[in-house]
Length: 102
Length: 405
Image (cartoon, rainbow over all chains, first blue to last red; front, side):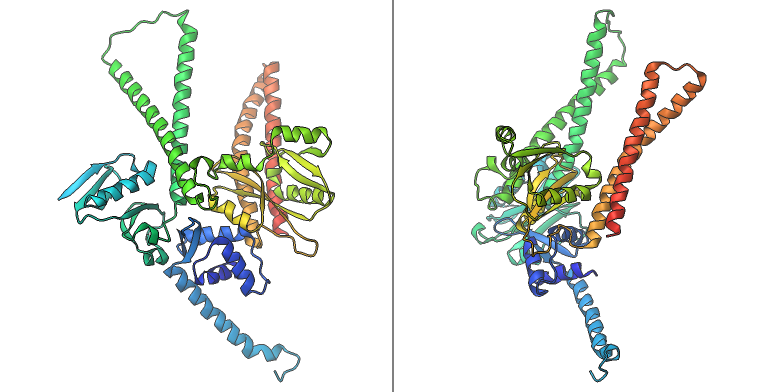
């Protein structure tokens, strides 16, 4: 999963509007990631086609995106994979560091 | 006891069908099935209740309502092909979410284009026959020969007329219904209660373009510089760069003519502005609201519904990073590929047709009976092949530039 797709899906921990996703990703990545609206629109359209997310219209009839069960399974699997990466990164970091005592 | 009701054109106006379903429910008729082929709605006798119905369209095989909708009281009543019907028994002021309409609008548009082409085709055929008939009626005497085969002719004519009427009915009906559906989704966005002023394509154009007199006045006073740029859709990145340097030179893009070739710049102070020309096969209303919320300004769009070019601008300060519509390589490449493939398919068709013609001419050339008009056609074919060939190469060069970024 690309970083973009991962962060978009992660920000759907609760249902959000399209631009709400852009803002949220910017917040949680401390402004490191600024997603372009075209990128988000394209990813959301694709995810919707694949059944990873679903949409509904809110009171103001604006489109809100929500993760489906399939999407939930997918992001959980990805988080586990990243956990493994993270653990191994910590475990082997000292071999690459100049100060071997870390 | 079951009740069957025939509704041949129910999908053309889903809002009307939904209201009708609600009124049936108030009479105690509960919807159980829709037969899409016979166009029958089947109801069973139940309790009388106030119920809100919403019809949805979804291409996914396993349709399920979003969990937010379910929590808000929505339940899936039935599914039939891509269509589904959801109902909610809550009072309408407690309902906070609804199934989306975009897919219905998109589906309706496809049907409209299909009937539109049939309508144009039939009209052209009838008109051309009428013209030929008129042209030869002075010289040729018409007479009817008695024959039982006439029945086939009449049958065909009758079918043609019916198809023509059906097309006309479908187009007008869907047009109105789509406008209402669009108005529904923009109802609160624009805070506008009248359907006449909905945020549709036409109003978008009117709202965002200056009047003709205004442009004339500015041109006369020398405040505006006009530049022309042809075939930029084959290399949109060059257009973006050109517009960005114009802004840095103090020429800000003010308006783009309807055909997308004339660019009007206003003289002013240098600015930092990002431009993005985007090509999509189909866009929905969300596309526009999304980019606008992200700070992009819509400068130009092609008025074709199915394939669309849009031009966006976004001002930024000198210490900021230039904003991009596509922030990742994957989507940048995908866009370039879409442009290159679409234009190549189109060009290849035209080039092949003209190559075949060249082949024919070269045979004539060998036979040495070549006149001037054929010579002109021969040169014309070469010109067409050259133009479309070079345009196709340009789109692939654009793709290569994006790839090597």
